[in-house]
Every structure is written in C-alpha cells, then in structure tokens.
Length: 486
Image (cartoon, helix red, strand yellow):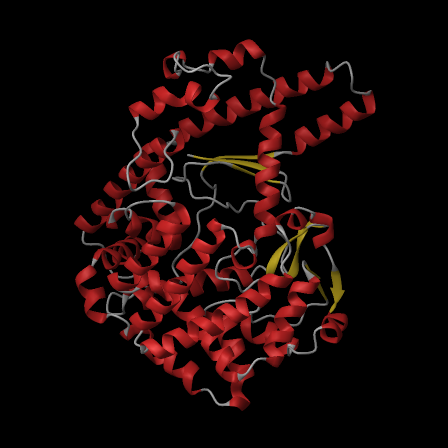
C-alpha cells in the first residue's frame, strides 16, 4: 500500500542519515576522476560532479536514468538469467518449483504462442462484464475486486500503525489508472501530455481486446469521467504525507453507516474470504466516499466500461505484443525511455514477481553462501556498537534521551541476505497447457490468498519484503527492521 511505501522510504533514509561519518570520510568516498574541472560547481553542480560517470556510461534508449544501482542490477539480472536457463536445461519434473519457474519464464519468452492467442485468453471474462444484467451489478463489483482490480476504492490488511504486532484492515481511496490526481486535474504541459497519452492507450488497448473504434472511444470517455471524479477527491501529495491524518479507525457499524452504498459484509467475505472485521482504518474518508457515491450513481454502461478497462489494463502485460507495444508507447511519454527492455529482462521480472524467493534460493546458493551472510551480520553488529557509542558520547543529548535511543537501536531487527525460512510454493499451480495470462493470473491469486490469510494472525516478523537478488535495501518502521538483500 502507498502508506507503507511512504513510511519505509522515509524511515530508511532517516536511519542512514544518523550513521556517524566525518566530512573527511565523506570526501574519501568521492572519485575526483568523475568531476568536470572545466565546469565550476557554483555554475552547474550536477555537471561538475557527474560528467565523468555520464561520459563512461552513456544513457541508452532502454533507460531513463543509469547509476551505480543500475550497474549492480544488470549484474544481478545476468546471474538470474543464467540460473533460470540452467533450470530449463535440466528438463525439470512437472510440479516442482524448478518446473514452475521455467514454465513461466519460457511462456513469457514465447512471443509466437502469445501473438497467436492474442486476446483470446480474456474474451470470456470481457463477455461476462458486458452481459451482466442490472440486478447482478453488485456481484460483478465483488468479482472484480476479488479477482482482478480495485475499482472505486481499495482494501486490504496491513500492520496496524498503532500496534505493529497485529494486522489492521485498511480501506483506501484509489481506482485511478494514472495513480496521481495531478495528471487528471492540472493543465500544465507535462500533465496534459500524460493525460492525452493515457487516453490513446485506453482506446488502443480496447481495440486490441476486440472492441470497435467507436466502442473503444466510448469506453475511454467513461473511464476518464470516472477517474477524473476520483482524482477530484483524492488527497494531494502533501496531504498523503500526513500519516496521522490517514489513521481513521471506524467500527464496522460506522463503516456501513457512513458508506451505505456497499454491502460490506459481502465485500469482506466474498473478496477476501474473511469475516467482517470489527474495526477498519479508513485512510482517506472523502476519497472512499467519492468512490462509493460514484458506484451508486453511475449508469450500468459507465460502470461496465470502467470495469472493462480495469480488466484489460491488468491483463495487457501478459498477452500479445500488440498489448505490450501499446503499453510501451504510453510508457515512453510517462518515463522518457526510448525503447523497451529486452524480452528476456521482462520475462525474468515477471517470473521473479511470482516466484521470487524460489529464484532467490538458487541465487544465494551460488552467490551468497552462509559464510558471507555471517560476515555481513557481524559487520552490521559492529555498526550498531559504533552507533551506540556515538549516541552515548553526544554532548547535546540528555541521559534519558540517550537511554531511549539505545533501546531503539537495540530493538532493530536486521535481516541480511536472505530469509531463514523460504516461502513454500507447492500450492501454486503452473500448467504449461494454460496460457501465459492464465498462469500469471493463477499465480497472482495464490499471492493474494496468501496475503489475505494473514488476517487474524500475529504479524510475521520474519517475512521479507524483497527477494535476495533485488539490488536495494529498506527500513520498515512498522516492524522496526532494516533489510539488506544479498
């Protein structure tokens, strides 16, 4: 959820900021060869500091930016590719994790089959949306939420901000394909360009899905009407940074009273498979109200068009090249990249998205043995000790504050390299006879079921939010943990 991402990003950067380092040590970490002596720092600091790097690493059309993280990521991707290709060479037995990994990757790479199938894998569901009678529109809404998208608003469990040992149920605003309200509401050049590109994307993808041009344009018009209305009630970026304002506990009775346009009992039972929660946290009450009001006042045609687009949008990346090419044309406007990532990189990304820890387990066996993990754990503990001494010797901090800071420092959970317990994928069914879209959808539903199964249980502090092969790190403030993948 966006709330957790905001907390994690701010928290990790805050932790790094307190690590003691002198000005002299900072200077030692800089490479003077990268500087541009012909451009004064006061005239153009970016040019002065980065010219050497940019000259040595010219930006290719595939990237919107290229830095040290990207170099490491390229190396990790090459390693993962070799591992996955190695699995295919062993002809893995059906039902094994190796077979699941290889099947997803090879289907993602099989452009011939995907192009031959085109939009066929989604036609039955599109017809279901089109043919739903008025009296079954609530059933359609629940079906969409339970399987494919979060139209009008979103919901799901996450650690309780007031008690991180337990899960809370959150209901949040959402339903905007562009994510940010500014793209819909602001009329400056940049936002207009993105908005127009999004309109073209909707029309093109609906035509790729089999709709005639006239119908595709109608769908686009209705989608923009609905998503612009949702954007009009969405919080600004500044408001979304006010975490306490997003913590609004509602009793279940109050939720039903405040938002009567939704059958909330059916919503939780049928979309998540859980009993109605006693309390929910509504993060943006006015945004949720807007979504519920739209759901109650729009015509069936408008709602169906919105659902049709939501369905196609989530399916597009798993269908033919016509769909992925159309999505890339939009991405060029959105991100500035000039060409698509190679198919093998996209295939790896999709496979890791569904079976990331399975690939990660193979990755660490080859590239990050237990001895490396033990070494890094020791290094981090040395950092913890050094930071503790630094805190104790701070002249401006009171003894009580120092004591609380040391308690906080000692309470950090540090995760290095990879999980102590790997995820069990035995229940995930990947069938090579099914289409790539069907297998990816089934894998996604497996992950969704896993997420909803957390409800009513204590928060698992051992769970990882990144795979070992991911080039990154994060701090989760709700769990008070710092995570450094391999």
